[in-house]
Amino acid sequence: MAKANPIEQLHAVNEVLAQTLQADAEQVAHVRRAIDFYAKSDQAQVPSFQSCVETLAQVHLNHANAGPVAIAHWHVPASEHFSPLWIRAAIITEMMKLSGSRGAVFVITSLREAICPEGKYWTKARERRFRRIREWIEQLACSWATPGSQLQVIVV
Image (tube, rainbow, N blue to C red):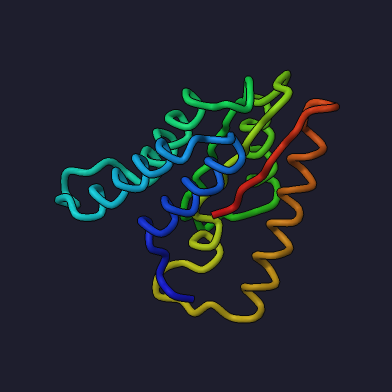
């Protein structure tokens, strides 16, 4: 697997959030330029990727045309203890933040990196594990969503 490029991931999150929250084209263009500026800045002084995703979500949420929408973000930490029980607890914690919302967006970042740590190869077995975990996360999130709500799960 090629190493994840945080700038490409931020662009992907921006586009999906813009589509989901029905952002206007001018706002999306402003965010694109801000991400490009971030890419060119001194990497020692920029915030973490997790912080950037949360800020990006807040920008789109504050300018949403889609009505009241709640956003939760889970950055999967690189950990040797990547068990279903640990994942389940983290997902439920984030889904509790979305409870009661008619519209909800759940952004998950760095799942691939948690499955395939730096220096390891992306194999077919890891691809199958990634797909299995992603599907399980989506099912779990849907089971904890408020009945009748519109939930979108985004895995970047």
